[in-house]
Image (cartoon, rainbow, N blue to C red; front, side):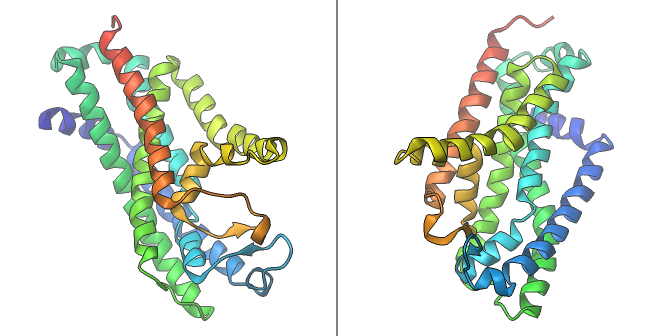
Length: 267
């Protein structure tokens, strides 16, 4: 298994894509931390006016440090799709299974490698966001690390990126065409789900808890950032509940996809 994991990591880190994404993660993390830092510490935001973001000092710090997470999990989602999709596209999946005849071991190695890749990119993003965000918060008169919960959020953000990579792995297996898999998975995560959350919130009339169990909403719950609109904000799960929901999505998609790959004919 160790050799298989090393092979999967080598496939990724010997391409030029990895450092390009690393730069994007760092710049996005730092840039969005600065933007969120100024936005959430402005007079309008801290005053808690109608529709303005409101939250505790911990939630403000969480939102500043994880401002780049929405872009980050799309990148790791893309990595997950490409980790298996590129094998089918370039016809290397056959040689991969010939090199490691036990398909379960190959798929297990891909899962472990993707969790590691997500954590690595999470660290890169957090380095940029924490440095830039802490400077802004301190300059605006806010405590950069008001509670230990901030450190928990930083650790959970690493898990978030790894789980979204596994969701991408499942999507890449279930949608054979790599380009289609990328467009559909990114479109659902960034466009379809936010629209669905708004529509479900309007339609549910007391059953708004449905929204909490969507993957993007579960991610927001793990981050525990500021809310929109004060008391009128939609309810969210506890951080551990969001982690369980997102892990369930990753396990279902990656697990079913791996099972299908193990049993399907590859030629």
